[in-house]
Length: 587
Image (tube, rainbow, N blue to C red; front, side):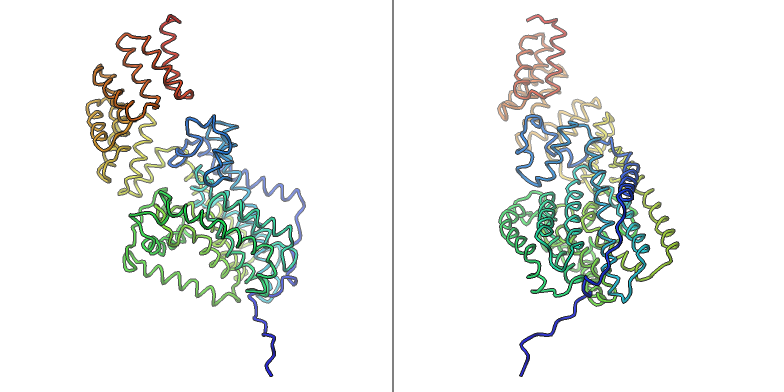
């Protein structure tokens, strides 16, 4: 007669009760560790701390004219509320001073580094029994410290830390690693109610900082498989306090997430020029590009130019796919002999999946996307080194040399982020065929008053992409600044022929007015008011025309109208103040 009870499937690791917990450090050692990490991070990123807003930074809420009047609910009511709340705090305390935003990123990066140390130290302890012996605790601590130091100073992190808009990656990682830390450091086989609540809260904060936080759920399952017995139904039942709310929350958020994915402009399945299978095929190659940068961080690029694989045979997508399948198979095969390295491989691929799977994103690759899955890579490195068992002195010396070399690379990279011209020059040199890099370089030249160089770079951009309204408008402003008003007017007329645009018509009026062509100026400004009567700059430029024609009363009225429409417009306020000084208070 067959027994009704099934034989228990062997797990990847023995009972966690047999795993000794590392002895704790006194509070002053933790304080010194945190302060040392913060000072190192501050010094490495010091060249970028006063750097200007860059790229997508310019489209965040704090750059809007109405930011001062926006209530908190308008900041956090749309997407990534946790992220937007931190931006709201920066704006309230420091306005548009970029130093506050950059220092916040450095502080959050340091906090994430401390969590990396805690995670690696715990994972090293969990993996030791699977190797048949308890490793020396001091060597595990040194190895965890080396892994955390690599996380702190690795040059690949520069984009996430020095680029303000990338705070979403840091916040999501900080909260997610915190949840994983609670999960791995739990007291028993099953999570207690407070532990489950803490993991749920931190995972929710991670997802509300950036959508990639949802990838933590399968990592929890992986951790249960590798480090706790009774996986599958037994493990899920044991931790129902965690998994049941996660499943319920995931189902509740699914319609919202699908809507975001479908209609997002720069990401989602609604993109017409990049299909889901093309993006997925390309990511087989991109993941290997990422791994190369982690191992050898040379050739870092803010805007890498990687071709799209339209088929499995294009650009080596088949080789990338075969390599990843082989990597997964190898990790599964050696999961008992090298548990930490195997766990790291699988966790890395899971955590990078939100940006490197089949959901199309406009940019095939971005260095900041490696911040979230970095713990997987570090787990692989630590697992292999732990198995290798190098002498402590050799380990310390090797780690020290590696960390110093990486710190030098990070400092050099941070210097670029402190100078937008140098950053975009570097990017354009590495991606010469990418129009966006040249456009951003041209804009940086224009912002610095190097208008002739800006004009030439905008012209170079126009040869790499079909000129749109934004390119033509900025090109016209650079040409006007460089003393070529006729060429500027030609670019603006070209832009006006593409679509009705209030900014184009207002700028036409501004340049005509500067040339003394008042009739043409007023005609263009009248057209601008037809397109959008609430655009404040139209009235500023019209006021300038009437001022030049000797009608200060009309100019005062128009400046007042501009200020009424946009009370925080500095150009309108300055024009009105100049008029009052010139008129001496006369009506």
